[in-house]
Length: 314
Image 1 (cartoon, helix red, strand yellow):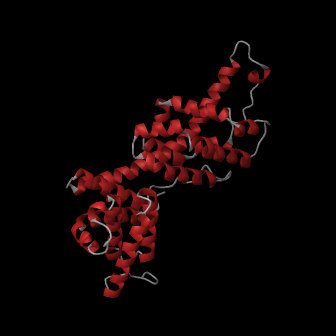
Image 2 (cartoon, helix red, strand yellow; image 1 turned 135 degrees about the vertical axis):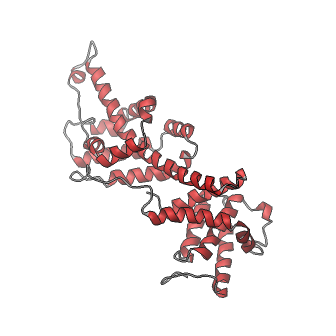
């Protein structure tokens, strides 16, 4: 689920928090880094589980409508198209998802079901839902498209849900855009014939990515003084005290990749940190960081410090 850019963001956040806390226990901070990434995965599972919980609320709503003393003919014989949506069935019957929910103890919506009710009420009053419910028969394509649009237009941008997640874990707010994108991609890839067998995405694509996260954190932290010295003279128009702390962290991480990660191309490193700076730092940060990294990479290449392995890695 995590891309290398997301891993870099998590390392940046952990290094920044480490600097702020002035904690000198590296092992503790490594655990914090891994925990923050694991909690991001919990949020991914939580968003998927919300979809199936909505179906449960919808079914209860229909049952209560049927039991009204003066129920209308429509309420007595309700349209079950929504609760019979095939995507709900696939998610409920997918062993990979159900095992992950159990392993990570994802039961938040059972305890805080008022937020599920909020989402369900928005859905049943939406044009999306009303148009879908115009008929009693549908197709897998229609079912899938409805759930994808509900996720995009109602779940992902919901402010009350955002506030709830922020109260649960402050770091989830930063993680939400990535998590919602990952959940959406998972939904988009579901197929009628194989959806129940589809494996849910893992937190790390492979062991190399997990190792990259830890090594980038360790090497940037342990070489902090040397990395700071590398920056000397490269920011002539900037007083050190005026440089945003996030920018300092990002530059040190990039220099660390230049010098200590031989398999990562220089251009990839520069582009990744520029994109991160655009999202997490000041408006001018990407221009500043680009200037510093461009100057350093050219110097390192001239001095033979870039020990990059493989074709096209300079």
